[in-house]
Length: 329
Image (cartoon, rainbow, N blue to C red):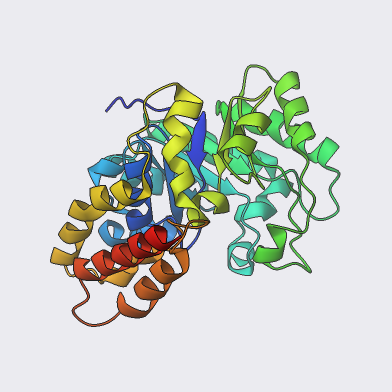
């Protein structure tokens, strides 16, 4: 399946956040953003309930899957399964610093093993026809990013992979939690630009600390694309400007209420399948951030969406509260 896919603007894979309901919501606001799944561990994809773990709605396209692992044979199997599910791209996680990931010898600790990463990616590329990409850090622990990053990319590029998504921070595997690893190591966007200048043949995508659409657009200078993470999740309505700002196309909606209404058919279809409302609306809590009524919106969804029998009427009540607050402002 050929899809209208571009890395110019991507939404980062984020554990416990970018599940299928989150991606379906984000897709309402941008037709062009490339969406990513949460990281799926290769063995879980192979031996677990793959439909539950990595199934997705066709409306999410273009959507890529991120895999975690370090065994070329297992990653190959998982990549084939992902391709059969219809994913537009398979991405390898070489950036996650969590203890669970380290114990499985994958994620950011693979920054120390570029040849193994190259072997994994080469095997995956051989197994599937969709693009294979890698997301990684500047380095880990005591590594000098100026040496580690360039050496890593030089080795990994020999796999034939040409798209590198660079989280512009080091990861500290000891002493910092995964949350701290997203904030404490300093950002270095300039080293990512130097990487692109040194390897113009590669597609280099910037990730890390991008605050909003304007910031992402400005920092894309000299690079091929950007990947927005927490800002896209906590303030999702900013995604309604992606298509115009990054692709010169009309935005689907310019009103946050219209976005929620457009999401209604998906929500109702999921409720009909037995999904609890809270599993869907937890991704919508930031929709009105910075606007009158944002607090009431969050309160109503947070307190009522998890109750037995909660349905679309809860969302309508929350929308009414926002409208009342806006009228009174």
